[in-house]
Length: 308
Image (cartoon, rainbow, N blue to C red; front, top):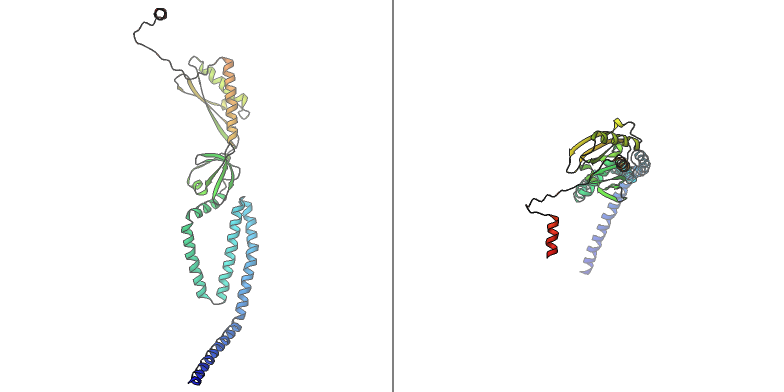
């Protein structure tokens, strides 16, 4: 009985060994037959790897000429590398006749991309917006812009945010998506900037003299104003305590700080000129009238208090 079991086990082991040897022989034959394709596929992968490096460097140099942001350049360079390497991988799989594996890989990549896209929708939106902003010619590093309630110099455009430096040297970080979805005023796109200044004079003033003096004062203190006729002057209203006017003129500048400096200069010059000519710039005055019917004679009031 024992010998019979031993013989049966021996036959099973021998049969399994024969199957294993046959399978190894088949694999060996398949390897020999597909060896040229495998070598060709390996060569394609190596070529695609080195091509990706050179193409990535070339794309990086081209992008740097148009986009000053290093982060954007690195992103496009890395994307180029990935695309070239993936193309080489798919070509190598096709050479090896692994179409099923190729389809599975593409399906998995599509599903993974969809999941990642849904999970990182906000971040991807900011990233894409950053790429779009980097290629816009009307927004550059160093421009003075106003957007989303902030005004300042553009110091950096990253993949996720837009950084501006305000006049008080504070930096404001704004998401790129917000920049694209809201209006943006770029003061640097033109080298001319209009300055508007308001003021008021007393009702006793000679208005023609006020207009002439104001225009001449602006012309004398602002070099960019060539003639007094280039200064716009308009009386606006009869105010509570003054007749109000605005004066407008243009300066040659690409920075909003120059607008503030021009205002500062003109305000001091107008104040000095009005003081010299005796023209009053009144502050708000409120007059109170009492009509009670009482006799408020100062003498009688004093006598009443002294008696008490």
